[in-house]
Length: 158
Image 1: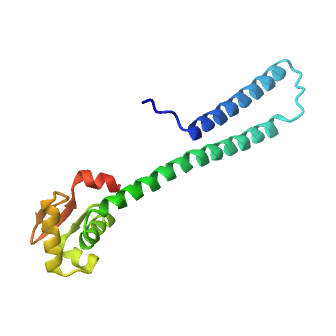
Image 2: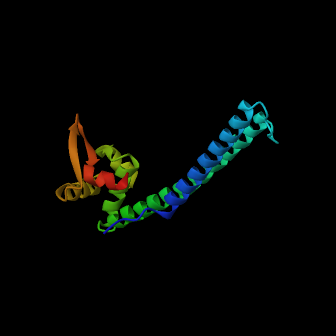
Image 3: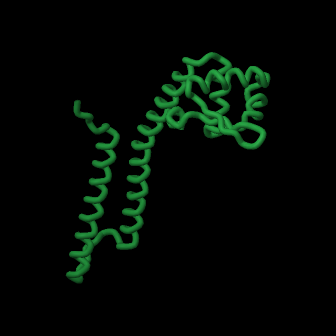
């Protein structure tokens, strides 16, 4: 199945193409009349440059609006999908995973009690279950462990 380009991108490209065409045509007209020594321009050149610059800012803002709207919608959709994946875990496991996500996927085990509000024993048991499911992995750092999300799962929440 062929994927069609999004309407926002096509509109943005059309606006940009129109802007480039207008600027090119204006520069050609001014250059042609200026080289002939007879500039029949009704608008002085410095004012024309400011008008085209302002038009350029407007076009840039318009294109940003179209493209950022699409990007924001995709980000919201991804966030909803990521949240839906957490529904497969029980309530306490979700607390631990959300804490890991908040700290970019890695945190010391000793911090998880405070972050989740759960007891040390409960956190230990939850981490054991998550490790068996290969959602997290433990790495020994001195007298404590660093708990990290599985890289594939981490990418879902980035």
